[in-house]
Image 1 (tube, rainbow, N blue to C red):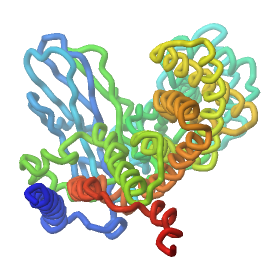
Image 2: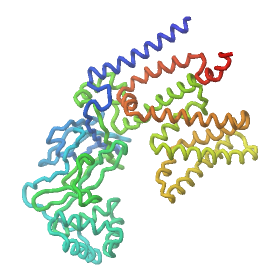
Image 3: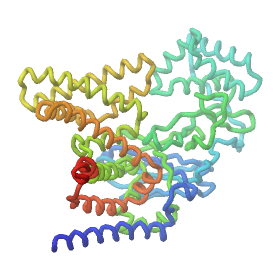
Image 4: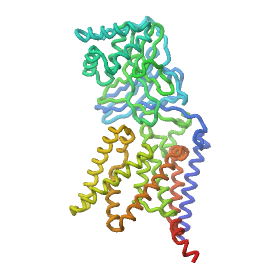
Length: 510
C-alpha cells in the first residue's frame, strides 16, 4: 500500500512539474502549444572556433550590414570576452577581445529575422569614387588562356550581368576548353577550395567588371553546421550585385540564402590564436528574442536546451525523440504484448528510418539481417567465443553495408547510400541475438521477435515523425517528465496483455 502511494505521489509530482513548466513557457514566453500557430523566425548563428596560444586575443568577424542597419534581433555573448560592434565607414565587424586566453575557444554571433527571409543580396549603390577592376596578376600561358576566355565571353554579352553569366557558363561547362582546363589546374593548386569562384572573379576583373568575394549561408536547418558559401559580388556600373556562381542566371532567393558578408573583406581576422574556423548553423525558432534575452539568466532557461548555442541545440532535435520511441516500445510490449529484440533496437531503428526513405530503409534492414544471420550460422561452426563472434559480426555487417551501398549506387538507387545511418553495433547484436534465439527457441520465435521489432519500430517512426510530437519534444522538453510518469505507471501494470486476452478468448467461452 505504501509503495502504491509513493508511486502515485511520484507520478503526480512529475506530471505537475512537467505540465507546470510547459504552461509557464506558454503563458510567459509566448511559445504556442500547437505547431504552426505562430510565424517562426530564422536564427542564423556564426560560431568562431580557434585555439588560443596564451597571448591577448582579438577576433574580428565581418557582420551582415543589413542586420546591423535594420536593427534585426542580434545576440553575441561569449564568456570571458569583451564585445563591441565596430563601424568602419558602413562596414560592420563584431570584435571580441580578451587577455591571455589559452586552449579551445568558441565565440558566437546570432542574427534573427522573419521566416519569409530578408533581402541581403539586393543591389547596393557604390559611394565615393567609382570602383576599379583589380588586375589578377596572371602571366605567360595563364594570361593568354584567360584573355581568350574573356574575349569569348565578351563576344556573347552586352552588359556586366550577361558577362557574369557568360564567364561562369564557360568555366562550369562539362566539356570545357583547353584554356579553362589550364586555368582550373592553376587555381586548384593555389586556392584552398572554391577554385572556380576565384577564377570567375579574376576573369570578371580582367574583363573590366569589378568583382569580389561575398559569403552566404543556406537557410536549411537540416544541414546542421555548414561552412560559408562563397558567392560573387560584382559592380554593373551603378550597383553592387550578389549572385551564386552555381546558379549564374538566377538572382539570390532570400528564402533560401542569407548573405552574411559583402564588400570583399575577410570573413574573420584573428590575433592570438590559430586553426580558426567559422561555421554557421541555421534554425527556425518561435521564442521571441527579447523574451529569450530577458530570461537567459534564469534557472528555467539554463535547465532547458534553449540556453545552448544553436549548433549544439540542433543535436537535441533527435535526442529528445528517443524517449518517445522508448514509450512506444513500453506501450506495445506491456499492453499489447508484441515481442521485440530488446528495448533499444526498435527505437534506434525508427531513429535511423527518420533519415531515409521508410520503404527502402526497411528493405535494407531485412537484407542485412538475413545475410548477416546466414554468415552468423557459418561462424557458429567454428566454435568461437562470444566476444570474437560478435566482433566478427560487426566486420560482416560493415562489409555488407559497403557492398549494398556500392550495388545501390550502380543501380541508381540513391536511397541505398543512406544505409550507413543504421546503427552498426545494434545490427550486429540483433544478428547475434536472433541466432541465439533461433538455436534455443526455434526459428519461429526468432522470426516473430524480429517482425515484432520491425512493427514496433514502424509505429515509433510515425510517432517520432509527427510534426506536433516533434514540436512538443523540442520546444517543451519538460513534457518528457509527463512521459516519464506514464512509463512508471505502465511499469507497474501486471494485468493481461491484449495478445493474451485474444489467446485465452476460447477459455472464457468454455
